[in-house]
Amino acid sequence: MAENIIHSILLVMHNIALVGCAAAPFYNRNLVKNRSQYGPKLSYELDKVVEDTLQGNAPYCIFFIITLFVTGMGMPLNHFLFHDAFKVLSNVALVSLILKLVSVFGMVVIMVIIFYKINPKINKIFAGFSNNNSPDSQAETNFFKLRARRKYLCDICLVFAIFVLIFSAFLGFGS
Image (cartoon, rainbow, N blue to C red):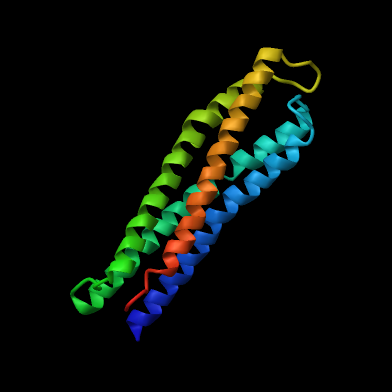
């Protein structure tokens, strides 16, 4: 009974992290899409809100990925703790697990690129903008190019998150 309770708690936390991993790129994508209706011209107040929102989500993304990984590792370890052996997976479940891990790894790679490469560049460019001045056209162009790149990566991250959700459904296959 204790094994089932621990497994259920880990699974609940894992599923919440899965939804969080899918929700972040989904909502970020929608925010960027809505912002794009105003065109590639800087609107300082609007773009400040967009950047604060997008970059403010980074800690949540990191938390959800860590939770996903820890709970994902916790479930087989929980089984091992009670049975002194890892659960034998069917071929379908094993392939699903591998594809799920590849998808999570893909999400982590994208997060690293966005959080440590693209966002700092966007911040540096945005720091040169102000509410009172017209931005330098080259800086404005670079700003929107970086945003487009980040949006493209978020779109890929959303696909990976959907794959994680799909592959998770097949992990219990054949058990």
